[in-house]
Image 1: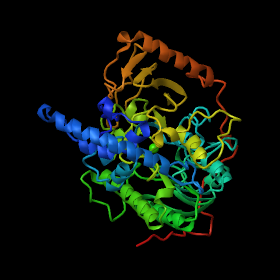
Image 2: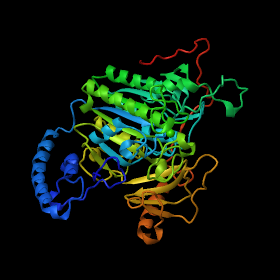
Image 3: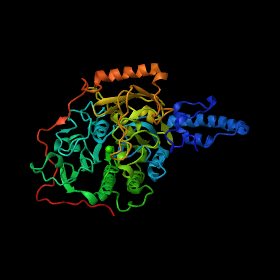
Image 4: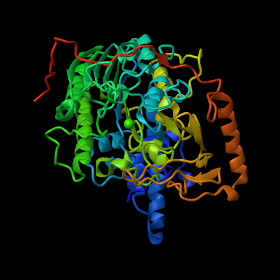
Length: 541
Ligand SMILES: [Ca+2]
């Protein structure tokens, strides 16, 4: 097995090589594929001398190639800033993609992206949908922007207009912006994407299991107030898509994405493609149903992969691939209580809804040919809160400082200039409760965590005292062994980080760093306007 096999994210990304092969970080990273070919299997001792000779020759070649490449890449800031595409899958697990170890789901396009880009094997989201999307868009922990939990149709709360968002900041830099897919940070007109920096929107405003039959009547009990699943174009409901009609949703999204790329080939553009897949209920398109080795869930994963392939093909056809950065990731861990209809977290403990690694660590690929070193992998702590500062820097803008943003610029890591995490520390929130912190390999849990790893009705209780519990994620990625007693100094250091966050956002209650959400007093359901009827959107053949 190749040492840096991208199918095995839990292997160390840093390869042990002799000192005489050492080169500056950029050279080491950009030649990862070449290096794998030399060290694809451990050399037997009696052939070691030949290997060393080859390696020395390789070092000389590397030095020349590295210098030439460094010169070629000297103008770090391109004349036209790159296009940016975020592909966000819903509930896709850490172990659900081929390049992250899945042997069931066929994901050749994601795997190709990994071979041409960088896998981020410690990239964090939030445990559930709404806080995850709020974090991604604002660069903040969801508690800071007061969207710590899932919101439902016609909720009074949404993403505040006072928050900075990626699309708004990129629009300020001249980017065309479109949101396609699941939004889920407020469904009232004033919360929709077109009021948060996106010029256009097409998609479901929340999860695809939230459709019902509510016609807006005040006589309907609050628990049953779910309008038919609305497909929204900008701010207007253009169709309703309950049940089997959702089989076409991924094709609708992908057609729209391809159309957007064609229409903005002059760039720069920002496309946020937030799939409805692979959230239960599962609705793979006809061309994918029954085709995978992993049931209906695998069928839908493979449709997402095919969608990604269409976007890659479009970029190549339009000759945009070297001026477009794609970040592929998921919004939270697999929904394990759904059994076969949910995904897998691979080697990680727990799933969606909890703060074990399986709930928040996502399969993530960064792709930008010619800029992000091909075939590389980084285990440095990164996450969706870093996307806002990263993209703003990439676009040539300045990250706002009028209010605190938690994320940091990842470009030094993504461009192979460092192996270190630019942020270093990750906090784990379940709702408003801070439950854990990570720095380097160490993760300290200070409260009971939910695993959510069994089918409905068979759930385990959250983890039990004593707390804190310390895990070494480098040697124990499955968080199985508490090593608190062996490392009191590490515990002390991480407890200091917890205290720091307690003074900011608070461990349980709302700390002074928490900002208010958006609020409307009289929310209304998103309904097709009376008399307009359903205007079914057409899809490509
Ligand atoms: Ca989700």
